[in-house]
Image 1: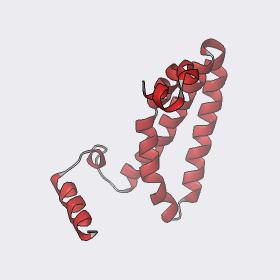
Image 2: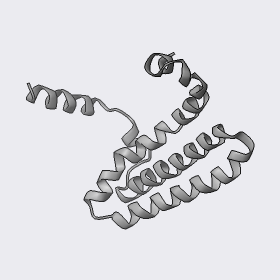
Image 3: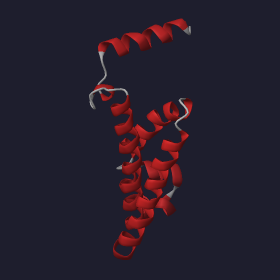
Image 4: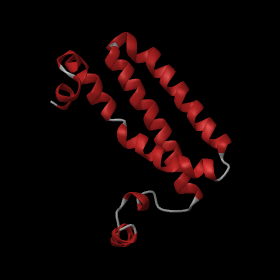
Amino acid sequence: QVLLIYSGEEYLEAIDVTRIILLGVPAMSLFKVTNPLYLANGRQRLYCWILVVSVFANIIMNLISIPFFGINGAAMASVVSFSVCGIAFYGFYVKEYKIKWYEPLVFKPRDFQQIVQILSKNK
């Protein structure tokens, strides 16, 4: 329904592709949150290599999945490459900062307090 509202009936054929691509959002979120840290800390080589591996994963998965699944195969390949990218960045982050893998994913009361404090300063 959202696709219909925002884009119109002519885009309804893309609903399956959209649903598949949405599966990659959590992994890409891991990338989007951690990647600025690598760039800010001068880790451009690691950043580049992870992206290269992700691109190759996308190419290989496209070659495998498109002949069988067409456009949905391309969407699946994208989800795989998003996952490779996000999990790799997150894995290096957890390893480098010596934290448990689940710690950054769990919202703590202290986090909420800090957000409230920041928002109250901006008023």
